[in-house]
Image (tube, rainbow, N blue to C red; front, side, top):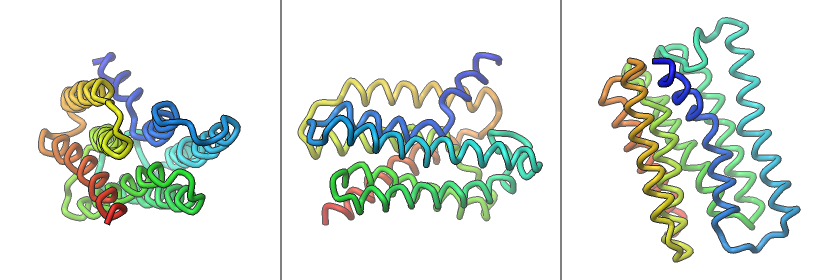
Length: 201
């Protein structure tokens, strides 16, 4: 049980926005100066990791949430609205930069996924944000591979394996039911593909 909690914490959804940006700059052909990449990563890290982390700590301090994993439907609503705003803002900022369009899609996809997860809360459906986060990254890497014609099958296989591990852990911890874990996987994947499809139209 202890190892399950460690895995669940390590693969917390808050870690994936910056993970996607790091993979983007590592995998793609270099067309930005290294200083530009570092600046973009630093800003993305502050916006998508440090800022949300501070918000979560504050919400816990003011007892607006009982757990950092936000286990109940009600305590997820306000944090989700904050995270939606953060991801959409990040995507818009990157898109306006006009140099990392595909990276901006990653955040728009996450934002859309969070919006749908928020809507489902009103139907008492608690989507697994852990599996949604990993499958969102899978979708992102998949269309990067397709767009740039590069073979990223090994990375996709590793991410799929990690998704299976995290899904199993969330079930073992009784944080989610099977349908919530599966829905998270589907939601994360489809929202990334949808955003990419709209972009390519």
